Image (cartoon, rainbow, N blue to C red):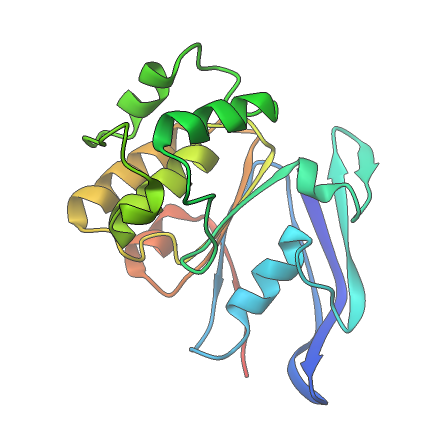
Length: 203
């Protein structure tokens, strides 16, 4: 998926977070959004996900030459952040089944095939709300990086992961299909090294 960011501005209570951003993210790009804490990285990636409206400007989404409306973008994007969550009253097999009913994780014939790719021992009877923060992050990344949606947005994806978890995450990111677009909001050196293009958001 290609994204064209056009004159994008976001303000809260008349204070501008960023103003008049213009750039393009080509289909299949691995791009990092960088900038100091509080500069608006998370705000920008929320807007790209369709979950937050800009104050001015727009994002144009194009997939295989066809324009995707902002109202429909949720069908084409995965968004992972430390502050978003899955339905924590479910256990992991139930979560997998829910995603399959929603038309996701189509390349997996069974829960076992998918959970093996998470490379971690999960209790299938345990509710997700009882997982540690690192386990929850691994689950969220496994839902996004092992699916075929054309746009993957990651806000500080290594948060709450130990080094083994980060190594697993980078391994999955390397295996994402070449035509899937990945955008990462980060200041982490390893996460920036994964990307080939950069946009800096300044206060």
